[in-house]
Length: 348
Image 1: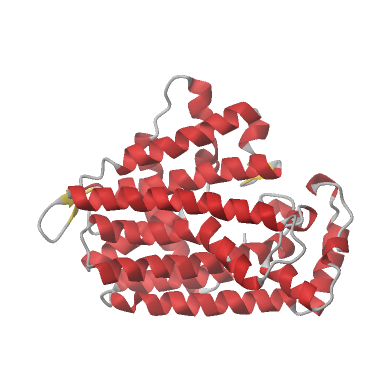
Image 2: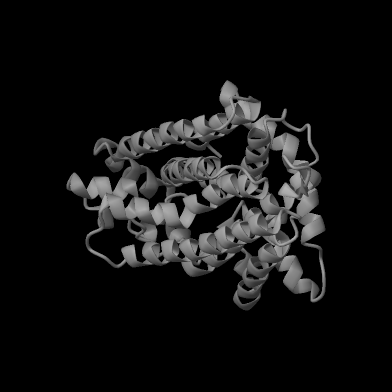
């Protein structure tokens, strides 16, 4: 049972919006022909997910407009000049892009599980999974084009979405490159994390401000909030990969070590003289034992590497909360601060 008050507030906020988000996903990404393609496209979206990014988007809209949470129709959110904007469409677009990245990421890493179910390429096949990801990618832009925002604002939201997708690919390329490099600097890792993961949070937070015609300093502040909290999120994910049981993680615990993925944890451990490459002896994630992971975690904890990553995530969250000072002091802004805290305190 959840006992942390911040976590309780965040999970309540997500629950209060998840039903609307899921209904919007069904509406904006209907099952169509060919059915197998669209079933595969919707597979991970139907498998679950907390809907944190769309919740961030919807809360950002409420914070910018300075309205009480859940008091305005997300499909017809009023701007200062009376225009009705579909901020939910923007939120759905980002969630669909997230699903696209997960499908392709699992193919590249040959991960068998995602969200506790077989990955799309396992449940269907690789060809269908690639096409499903591509379909999600293009559909996200179609949805973003239908927000009803002022033309200049809608175009800027589309531009940001395109830039986000490009940066995600750049981050993934760096992640792959790091697996074959002898030396990776912590700054390079943080650059990779920002591109691969955090830009999606930055986009999710900033898009509603763009659509609602907020001032540039507010848009920039929300984007920075997403970048800093999203980077902390990824660092925490790297910690959870080592510390959470596979059945709760939704994939094999310790899989990052088998795949030779560089993280802030392994980079710090190398600096302490740890033979990271020899921490586990397994050909792939399916042959990795819990005993091997426990031994590896013990070595990393003794080196102070896991605590080092946690402290870095904490400092990023503090920066993200400071970014929000550009927003009105209201309930939605307070909830965005709580979400930043939750991103580094969560388990699975």
